[in-house]
Length: 187
Image 1 (tube, rainbow, N blue to C red):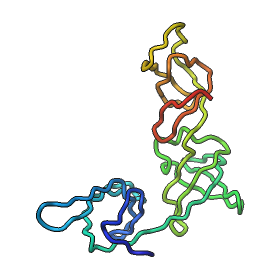
Image 2: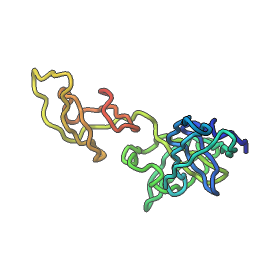
Image 3: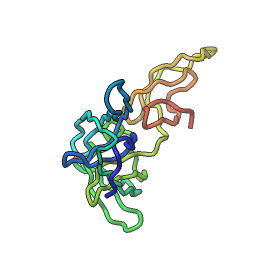
Image 4: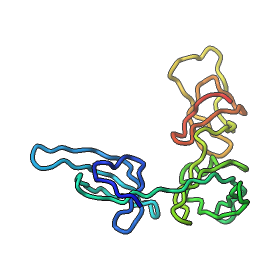
């Protein structure tokens, strides 16, 4: 695995540190008045989700890990495990649904999911950035209400609550950003 200097760490990098795999979440480069510069790195453990703040000087060497990304198709969920299929080899794998966290309700049948592997261990799964959902319930459309920044609450067919513009009504399809969990546009 390639080693990088402490000042080359960027957000999103995956590092092997203290015997674990860590994703750099936030990196601040600090140059104090006295002493050498360093990078203050906030990291999240990819296996158990714990967080760690660590200082790396430019002379420190850290192992950067490259994760293999595979597109896999979601088939079904069985007792808390997501069953995914590799579309090239047709191999099926089971992953814990906790990998998706709060984005789990946006997972739909047949959806393509990007799974990141380190050797043969699945560490992370991500959904497409935009997903189409149907509004299950919201307040009725009020004619003439066109205020620019007024939003109303709505519940989607998957149970997630989002804010939508006043012109969007019940049983309409909308596009939702899975990263921010916000309304984007009508579908």
